[in-house]
Length: 146
Image (tube, rainbow, N blue to C red; front, side, top):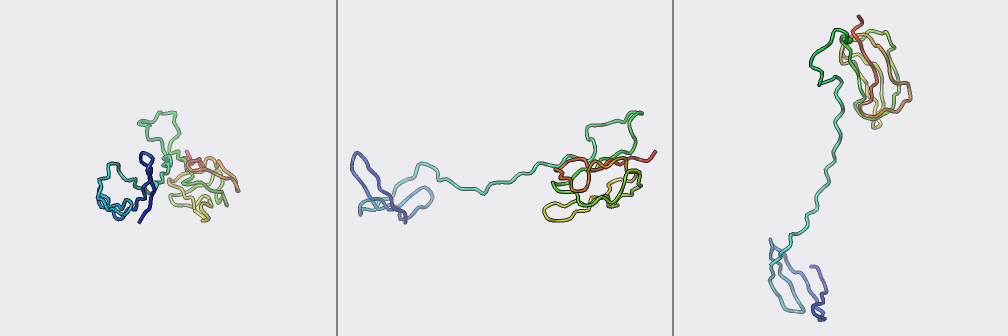
């Protein structure tokens, strides 16, 4: 039971809320029980929704056609979440197949293998050991080896 004290036109009233159902409250005002309608809506506390930005794709979705001068089979491997680079297992010029582990990254106190998502030759590695990276940062560039 909640207790309140109101002053109306200089008169003090002790009010106890006995029960609330829907928009009707049963209250005790200085010993007299009343049923009153509640006109304002009760505040409902909601659990906040956490939103996370989506990671940018590893390819250029807006590119519909390739030009003859474009590099063929180039792919960028991006950080899936923020973390720290622990180990680099490949070097520029090394051939990789889909699923080969290229580097190991610590994120959220876990070691994550960053694997090749297409076959080719590593053109460049954009990070070093102990570098801190953010989600979506380019880690590795893989080319077709042509």
